[in-house]
Length: 151
Image: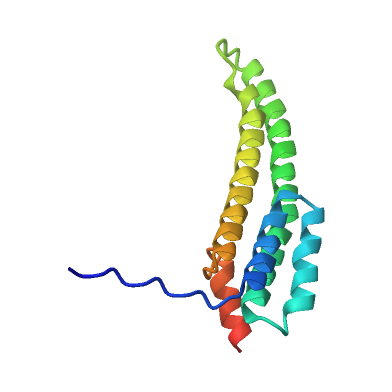
């Protein structure tokens, strides 16, 4: 009978895994959560490559939140203006029926909320994987940072 292979031990210590997980879990505090990855990266970048990489990823990932928030806000405001323009255009055409154009801003607002929720869940998945000592990479950001940190 073959015995299953033993799991490979993680290279990161318990303290390193906790610090890396804290960097990612701070995504739960929008705006202020960015302070934790900054402090962890500044204090740990010379001590642990694992913590430095995970905290820098979390920092940049959380900097994307306000950028996406502003973009979403512009889309929402734009959808309100578009709704008004289309409502006037439809009324001039004597169109009688359900005016679905009034739901467009709510659709945009729901999409913004859904994207924000997905980003928080993805950050929490990073926290869980970092706490387990696994090498977590955000989709595009992780590979980009890995290449630039190795130079």
